[in-house]
Image 1: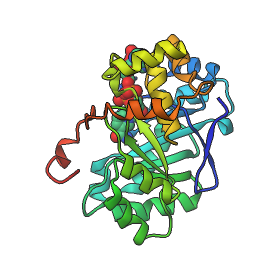
Image 2 (image 1 turned 135 degrees about the vertical axis):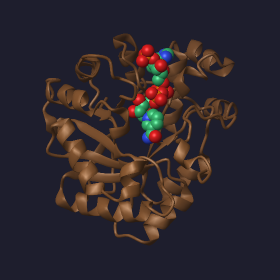
Image 3 (image 1 turned 30 degrees about the vertical axis):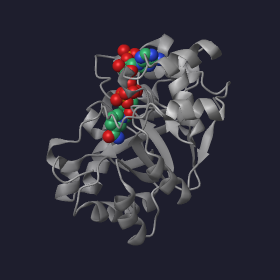
Image 4 (image 1 turned 90 degrees about the horizontal axis):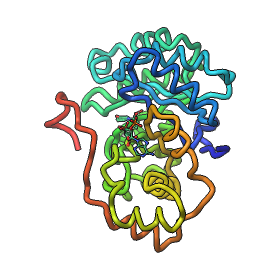
Length: 275
Ligand SMILES: NC(=O)c1ccc[n+]([C@@H]2O[C@H](COP(=O)([O-])OP(=O)(O)OC[C@H]3O[C@@H](n4cnc5c(N)ncnc54)[C@H](OP(=O)(O)O)[C@@H]3O)[C@@H](O)[C@H]2O)c1
């Protein structure tokens, strides 16, 4: 699992990580982070909105892998952006995590009228060294352009919903052409594409699961993946995606099932203004 992106911040980010949304049961985050770390996962993705930073921090500190070998992402939520207390929100996240720094701090959603101010405050946090890299999530080309044209630092990462049922070729091309790494969230579409015929056919051909084929398709598009699971067998399965390759024809066949289907809902407070 030695596959990394070289970020524009000069740091490296693993291509594969563990998504931790909805991992909130008692002791669950600690247990799943320990299991994942023992399999080889090094990237863990949380957010203040996931309400599990305390448990995730505990898991990170006790997983048996030195902190410097791990990559921890967290994100600022919309409310903190709206009231402009970015520094305070970041400090609270660090405190809950019990860490001195995070590897990546993301703006989780673009808030019209706020994102640029938030970004300037994120740049300060980055310069303080407490976030090794800074980036965004759910940003479109327009949102990114606003930041790029009006600030010093180009986001290191754009974390977006991306999977075979929701392809984003133009946005991915835009990001990659500007040195912004794309990380796919909900890369399994929460299971929605796993029964599709083309995935099943390729799973049989390569003696893999449909999930592995879908994750591999994303990796071959040059993007990272952060599938979520709390099951050890699935942690292992989702990690075994670096030792086979889909052909160009097979990649195109998977491209063709795109139907613009999203699994994440846009937050209520952004319904009328976004995307
Ligand atoms: N930036 C954002 O706005 C944003 C939004 C949403 C998500 N995210 C991040 O992205 C991560 C992943 O997204 P997600 O959790 O929404 O969806 P996902 O990773 O696409 O799917 C997770 C679901 O798939 C199941 N699963 C996992 N591996 C499987 C496999 N090999 N075969 C069959 N089923 C499998 C999991 O079940 P079990 O857990 O029962 O195994 C879970 O129900 C989140 O955890 C979060 O870190 C970010």
